[in-house]
Amino acid sequence: MDAQRDTDFVAMMPFAGQLGMRIVRASRTEVVGELDWAPERTTAGGAMHGGAIMAFADSVGAVCAVLNLPPDSTTSTTSSSTVFIRGVRSGMVTATARPLHAGRSTIAVLTELRDGDGRLVAQVTQSQAVLQAP
Image 1 (cartoon, rainbow, N blue to C red):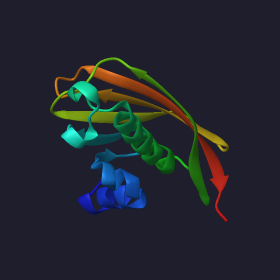
Image 2: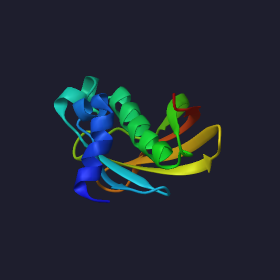
Image 3: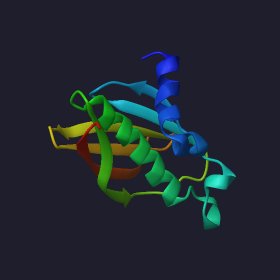
Image 4: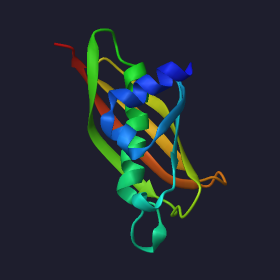
């Protein structure tokens, strides 16, 4: 996937752009994104805020869902479950989203988030509704 296409995914989601995330690789089977630790993304104690991690995972998972949509449809997150494993106090978080199920009415995506040392930070499972385009 070329850099222009990467930019298009983030541009489709203005909040993702505000968050500062990047899509570095995207295909139907795997989407990889990056988010740098920054003071404005932290909570008490300097750990990256859980909301920032969840928003990042939701956005990367949404790109995975979009790439698995049937023709002439859109998607919207209907549920998201996050398990936090460890805090991130520096560096970068990498999110890798893979489809668990890509059907005609729902898409399920599993996103793993890892720190710069490759340690699991969080795991997010989300469901996306497949909506017919107007």
